[in-house]
Amino acid sequence: MAVSFAKDIKPLFTQIDIDHMSPFGVTLDDHAYMSDATNAQDVLDYLDGTKQPQMPPNGPYWDKPKLDLFKQWMADGYQP
Image 1 (cartoon, rainbow, N blue to C red):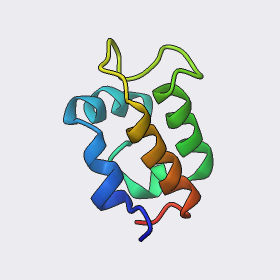
Image 2: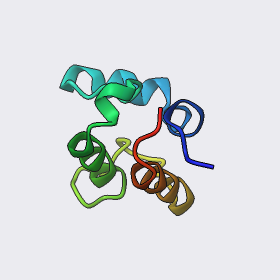
Image 3: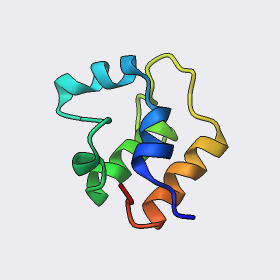
Image 4: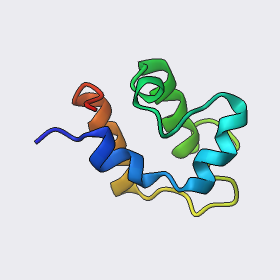
C-alpha cells in the first residue's frame, strides 16, 4: 500500500514544527506544498542533516524509519 500524506507523513510533524516553519513559507501540514518535489526534497534535506541547521531545531531528529517513510512517500508519488 502506498504511503499517504494524511495518514503517514503529516502526523510525523508536531504542531511546534508546523508553527516554527510557517513564517518561512514552509507549510509542513499542507499536501499541496509538500507534494511539490522541490519542497519535499528541501524538507528532507533539513530533516536528515544534508542541509544545516538540521531540523527540528535542537532535536529530537528523525530516526531512519521516519526518514525512510518520508522517502517512500516521495517515491510513491506524493500520495495525498
